[in-house]
Length: 267
Length: 338
Ligand SMILES: Nc1ncnc2c1ncn2[C@@H]1O[C@H](COP(=O)(O)OP(=O)(O)OP(=O)(O)O)[C@@H](O)[C@H]1O
Ligand SMILES: [Mg+2]
Image (cartoon, rainbow over all chains, first blue to last red):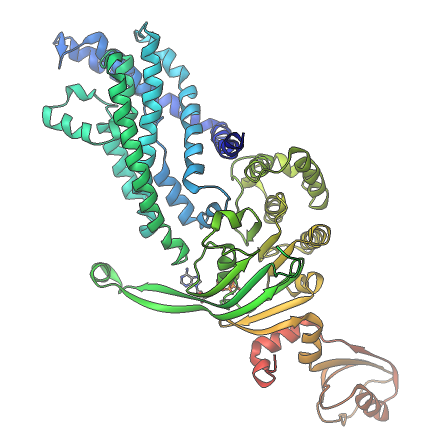
């Protein structure tokens, strides 16, 4: 009961994410439009490629099409934007007031991110419909969907803690634009939003697998696209949980140092 | 917590900021990277005071005196360099989260509200975070809506509010969980008289009804006169006065004004007792002020009446603004027995 009460104090922030999302409805349509355009371009691009070959890196046309469409549907949804949040709060001097809320600061922002992921996924429904029009063949196995959902949330959590660590730089520099843009570009490529990791040259693929970015696109989508078999799920989840534990501990430690820039130096 | 334990206790509090020094240009930036140099800024030098529960204290001083820095240390967001802070028996910095549940803070023009959402959404969230009973929350929302005239503001996003509306919203958000201690750092900055009045009435009511302890920082002495029985004046990070408002008047209100209405305009210069001087003169009106340590009102009045036909005269209390101006100006160094 007390746990439920405690949780309810945090989940209020998840709800705020949804409400804030609704407050920006112009953004929503803009975003949907550009994503739809991107999806269309991708479909024609891959059709042209597969006109030359039956298989690329062991993936047939339908598999790749499934992957690319789904990757476009969820592109960006699993990002937490923590880096921008920190940058904004520090620049506006808002951080002090946020730190004065009677909750764990990281827990608060995590709850907010969970809300963002859920609303993000829901808001992408129109794109899913478009993907079906473009020939997406969703899997029949319900387990594949479950694996997608679990690995997406675990992956988004991994990225949350990872970005949290990077965000701590903002406490020293207060300037996050450069870092943010770099992160965006790296993430776009190494998450597998543009091409499935399988198609990367050996060395690059290994590198991408060492980095955490693939966990918010490639890992969940490959379950739905039939690239990663459901039987591998336990192994994948375990790996993600290990990432989360490690990064959660590390990010809290890094933050406890970074926040001194505010609590000792006065921001 | 026992009844007599102070709500806030501060002893020999000190805060020194280390400001990184950097020569201009890229060279300077690189040099600073390898051999950082710091300048020290003593924001709070040595401050001690204690506030009993239920008191409203005015915490005043010139720009840069160290008021906001003190408030930040009281809230727990800033770590003291030295000295001790206890708020409701806790070290606010070490127990920041536990302390946060019991306090409320307003920082001038900053906001804790959600910029793009209707005010009521922020209030709902805050009530949930602080676990305000739903029934109590409804009651308070009604009360606050009445005193602060929140009415149509509740549905408005903060982004669209005027400064005065924002401040009313902010106060509601800060007090909706009925904190026992409240810090208000310039809550009336930039507001018109009507809104100021509303805000003062609200603070007064919360204090009276719930025994809320309030530390109020302001440059508007009207706030102080209206709300505070006690004033702490600081300068350069030190307390230069701590006591009742009335005493400031008595001790530092050296000058008193006296105004005469005369039958005829003044024709020749007046001879006045030492310590008295003319400060204003109109057709048939004469304004004087006198140092009451050197002359008495009756001496001055008698002197004037001896030289002029007086129809009426009135004595005025020194106003707080001019007194504080005197104190800030260094009057205390000559009369230091604080
Ligand atoms: N984070 C900081 N880093 C360095 N110096 C600071 C910092 N914060 C405040 N100071 C300095 O400390 C001194 C006290 O500042 P503070 O904000 O406490 O003044 P104040 O009494 O609130 O003034 P005001 O009436 O203008 O609000 C000032 O000289 C200020 O420049
Ligand atoms: Mg200040």
